[in-house]
Length: 303
Length: 250
Image 1: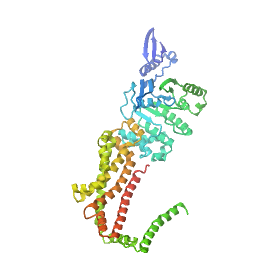
Image 2: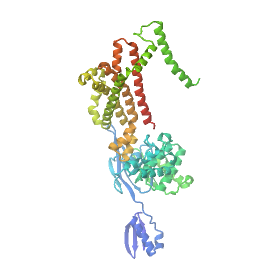
Image 3: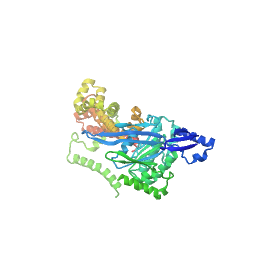
Image 4: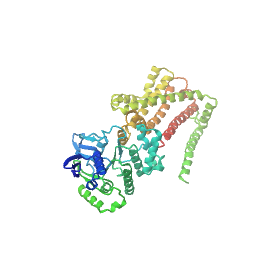
């Protein structure tokens, strides 16, 4: 028996001169694992990677956005854009202002409707309030509620019981390092702390996808670095799918599994890079030559 | 002297200087009391009104008109404000008429209200309501219109809409503007109640003022002006206190 990989997706399997073609998904992976276990083709299979191909959580098919200004001029904010977003991945959209990165994010969130093209969600289009988590550029909190009540707000809206919602919100607040500020009002916190609360609010209902629109853009560099590390920790812990819009090359390279480089006029995705850097990133990564090569590549592409 | 001490000194000195000037002028030029009574005569009149109890039925009447007018007018203004704020189409349809009604001088309408609703309490409350209604409505509309765009986006993400969105997000966010309208309305309500009593009826602070004016009881007139102003300030302050309590998050 022999296995080979074809186009990263289909696997061909020869068993005693018979050829079988498999689409690699969770079932076939289990099947291969079973063969390996039961029949002991360990040596033959060992060098074939059978890690599951991540299934796309959402596919954007030719998503286009054209804005019409009042005097009839049209602005092509986003030319037909096609990209798959895999479950559990950290995808960054990077590019100059006007490249349509925020527009694309808002289309994903359902805040804008595409002029053409469509989104294909694996589990059906988002219909409930718990499907999408969104973190805005500014921390959008309800100023009359305490931090705990702000984080709990989506759960209250969804009708989760008071005790459970309080527990989950408190757990989420300690995850973002705000355990001691449950009773504080938003005005009493710094910008960075407010943004952490907003992140906690976006994660507390375990959305299918978390969309972040330059969430750290308004913060100072030190706070930004710290929050980047915290975000990586949260991503590792929760396994959520994150689409992250930024204009910082370093931030994108530091955080992401994949980086989509976009360019303006008209707005489009130019290239998508799979960084393949060590997932357990830390400060040490910033001295990694591989990391710096990526920075250089991305910077060149953005010019 | 520190700034705070200076403020206390000026706070005390200013009214004392003014009262002194008033008193000095009356004594020095021997002004007859029916033209300008000395401050001590006004104070004595205020004390008399409260001690012999003359003031109570009048004060009660006026406060009743103010409170009733303020309540009815605010609720109506608030409800219509929510309707207009939430539906631009309704606003386009009836907005211009409301503005027309607002620009019409209420004092001109007052005799009409008396003609329609009689000399009793109703016409007085209607006049007060007509003054209270508009600022509260405008405050509510502005409040609902100035809900930040990001909060609307947040509601869209959480699929929060309709009444739930109104109660949980839009109205709390509009509280500052609604209260700005209410505070204007409180002052207007006091003016409206006095004006209505001025025009008709036999009780109320407004009536007492007309009585004092026509019978040359100038100290009584001055006392009424003082009491009315204090009443207005009291109503305004109680609203301001409620506002501070409600808006402690600001």
